[in-house]
Image (cartoon, rainbow, N blue to C red; front, side, top):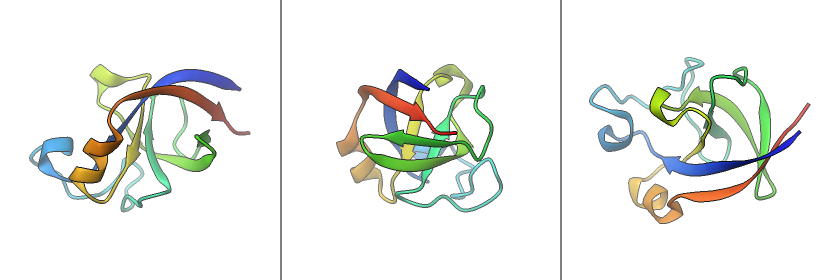
Length: 94
């Protein structure tokens, strides 16, 4: 299935993830740049998605107020800010 969605970026800092930020995803494992994406709550953790030709695994969740977006993990806050906010096609892989 292919859908259009808002794509954002985040890192494990307190600005992106709040005061309790520890770099642990919703699945209980560390976030990994190039693999981790926070996804909408209607997708099961472990779902694979393709965004801009890269395959990510939904291992984290977006904040409830941003449900419906995909949030790609970056190691640094500056890289996440450079990514910005985009609208793009997201392919939900079987």
